[in-house]
Image (cartoon, rainbow, N blue to C red; front, side, top):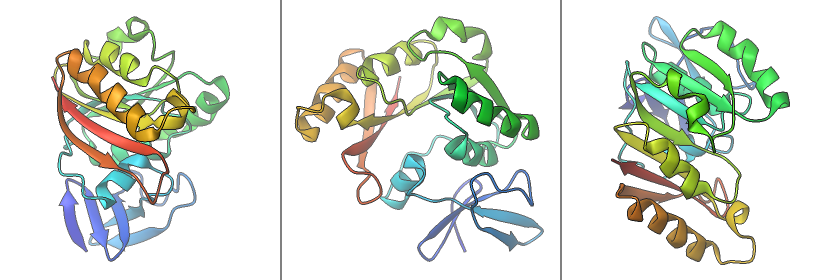
Length: 214
């Protein structure tokens, strides 16, 4: 088992995080005993952050005490792995869908470092009070103005940002490469430095993960 980042491991073609909640599965993932703890398999077909790591992500700004604003938390699949990584930090989980949020709540009740917030990522003022100590924005929302939403949220956080760009959610009529270029330009024009752009194929079609710093 090779350690890639804090609490992130790779064994063969499989990715794992060191579980903060041993014995508990979040989405049916495989559990593996490791030293005195337990690893949870991290499926890159179910998590864009895992896909980016499998595709060679170099900038991974998460550590044991990192505060994370996670936009588009859904039911908590990737947030739960981020929770494992930032064990002593916090993951502020923002989700707009009431249905997904209701499924997220039990997970947040089990994991003390996950804070559920029912809100729209277009309106960061709604959850600004939760952002003390947050130094990373992670965004995975299927809305048309993805980069513009990201820029709004990065304005409230000093540190790193990771944006999943879903080309087909931005403009289905435009070539994905052109969509990526257009959205990345929005980020750059806001004065945010782009460190890395990782295509997510074969795990996700027409997606990239953009890593930034302000």
